[in-house]
Image (cartoon, rainbow, N blue to C red; front, side):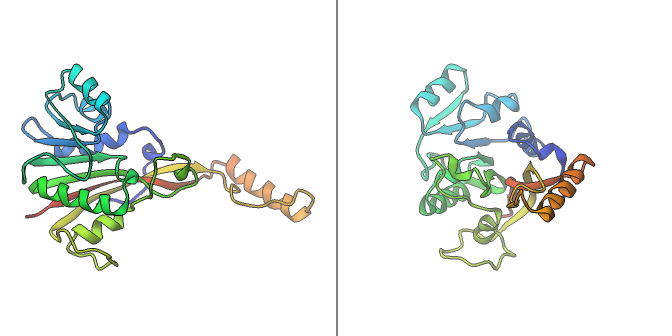
Amino acid sequence: MGNRMNLKYVTHKREVFFEVATKYINDTTVVLDVGAGKGDFSNFHKSSDFYLLDGNEETVAFLKEKQHKNVYSGMLPQLPFESNFFDVIHCSHVVEHLYPEQFYETLKEMNRCLKAGGVLIISAPLFWDDFYNDLSHIRPYPPVIFKNYLCTNSNGPRTRVVIDSSYEMLEEIYRYKKEKFFADLTINSTSFLSKLVLKILSGFERMGLKFYKKTGYTIVLKKKH
């Protein structure tokens, strides 16, 4: 599991994070995309066989018109599928729209529907400056929450019963945003010292030194049994 920064993840585009799933998907993999939207994830992987779930009826109709074979309408936390059915469950930028109890029950449903040996791939934002500018955002759910309720080696604080302790974190990749060195500084424009600090920091930027802030993540968890 790598945690080193890669400049290709300094982006808000989702395709680079869709690519993470590539190594876990082949022609026989049974894949569910939760909150499929316009089918971007399945289109990226050039597949019309993925199971696509969305709660918007217009979106569901659109997906069916585009000849996706397995399109389902449904609202979380319920997943209208059999237990132990999927090899891969993918969920991109959905969990942040859920209240804690909805999130917990959704995680239970994903665990129910995922086969032993299957992988759960989650992409979501962390808390950052613009998080609540989207009025549909309820709260961020950082990777540690998934570890606390799904992974064997987690001893983190919990307010609910552990869902499954057999998962292993395979990948933990972060999305970044480039920020100015002095973005959060309060500069007194009449102060010589403040002007000097600003000049020095601006010089660092001109030299190519950059500061990056984590704004989101993609994690891959494997269900062992």
